[in-house]
Each structure stands twice: as structure tokens, then as C-alpha cells.
Image (cartoon, rainbow, N blue to C red; front, top):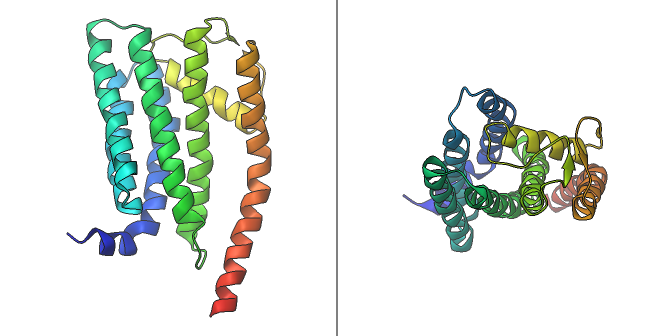
Length: 224
């Protein structure tokens, strides 16, 4: 199979597919997992498997694929350890894996979304995917802080439980969109600093995104 031709034909479409997948995983699977309907490992393993394939097709970068496969290995290891004896170690393995997945996906999506050329529907959706991915990155960072400082967050205990993923996603988006804080709030200084960074990004991204997309579209029309 010619990966170059596949990327040229389906690369933009993958932005929409991955966005839909991430939305389902974060806003459907994670809450159901918190209710005990889904097993712990399904959320992490399914998303990682699809993202590895998507990143490979979109980027063609060996570094990106190796990073995603490494994250997948960390997720599998964490799942095995969790089944044997849940601990902070497997929680940190999951957080590290999602941090790698988030950073790698953000890098790949940013390259595809903001590359020169015509701005298509799929590239606009790719910009949304990048926004969602940032929330995943910060959720992983919040996990690290929560395991290092158990009282870093008021209203949320970062421990290995079915509801943790849903809580972290909720908290990360409440921070990114600046709609919080009510039930959950950062207490530790490092947690507050990260929340400030995420909130600033959430405010600046829409304006920067609009300016960049308009510039790319105008440049494309000038070259026609």
C-alpha cells in the first residue's frame, strides 16, 4: 500500500474522523466508564489504537509513530498492572501515555491543519481537534500533579478509579473554556499555574486560529 497516496487522498478526512472519535471517547465513553458500564482499559486502548493508525497515515513520521507505539505500550503495561494490583504507578503510566499521545497528535494535527493550501471543512474540524487535544494534554499534567500532591485539587481526588478520567476531562475543559470553578478547583500552586496556562490558551486560541485560517485562505486565492 502506498502510504503517500493514502495520505494525499484521506489525510484531511482523517482529521474529521479522529475528531469524532475523540469526542465520543471523552464525552460518551468516559462518563459511561465512570458509571461502571465500560471496563477501565477500553477507553485507553481503543483510542490509542485508532490514533496510532491515524497519526501514521497523516504524518508519515517515524518519530510520531514510534512515540504513539511507545504510549500504547505504556497503556498496555498500565492496564496489566491495574488488573494485578492498582497503584499510583499504573496511574502515572496512563498519564504519561496520554501526555505522549496528546503532544504527538497535536503536532501532527497542527501540521495538517495549518499547512499552506485551501482551507477545507476537514481542516477547520482539524483546528477543533487540536483544541480538544490540548485539553487531553492538560488532563495528563493534572494527573501528575494530583499523584504528587494528593490535595492539589479541591473536590477531586486523583486516585485510580473508574470516574477519574471523566473528572479530569471535565476539569480540563472547565479550565480551558473558563467556565469553572464551582465544584472542582486547583489548590496547589503548580496546579493553579497550569490552570492559568490552559485558560490563557483557551482564550487566545480562537482569535489566533481565525487569523491563521483567514491568512492561509487568502494566500491560497492569491496563488490561484
